[in-house]
Length: 296
Image 1 (cartoon, rainbow, N blue to C red):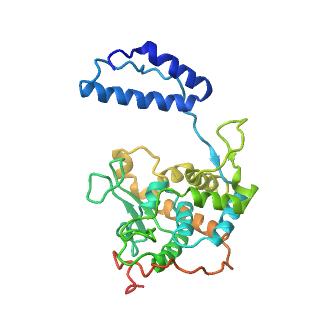
Image 2: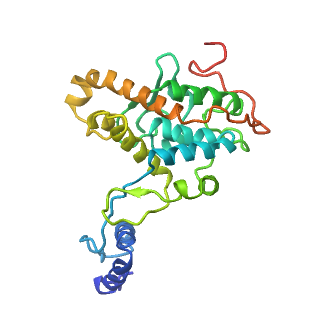
């Protein structure tokens, strides 16, 4: 490795950047990390990978329009637990993929109607930002959770539990589900708009695009203020003023925003959806943190 120099690295990055600049940037980052590891373990004398970027990170702006959301919700009619609930929770909460997939019953306070994600430094925490995020649970989201409670495996800590392996959440590889939904929707959601580039070519939507969709429709259709949407999506930078002094300022507006968004979604969910059988091993949800059948 000591014989590899910048002269060897440069043409590789330049060739990659000429055709796929985003991939070139990712490759450069990974290569630098690898050489830093090598230096730390005395496998290389220096890092030949330059800090100056050979590529660029392109901001993605893909979102689904209202009629596309309607088509997507209709396509979900043919899905059962946990796949249907997974997509509905992505839309209802606007949270990130990993946060929804790992949603646990003990993170939900049914009485306060909140979902709290703890930082990784706390027990059972899984947020890397270093701070908690508490989000209001709308009526629409409550309906999804109550339905999930009827189908998830008994004793499972996860809202979206695996229907094959006890004690595990559903798989994070949902490419097959994505393909099924796209095929059912046909041209309705297969290609989506990208507002980040004027001449962008329509592209296939991803799960993370649903998070952007939530923010976009909240702004364009429901006219919810940007600062409220930012708070809901946990995009505001943390600080003493925000965290301590104006926390109450966002309380009521964010609750109202989540309820309005839930109503918007509820109006587009098929009211005549055919009831689907539960997974073969599905029983009842675990009685934890107020989500037991003993409480209303």
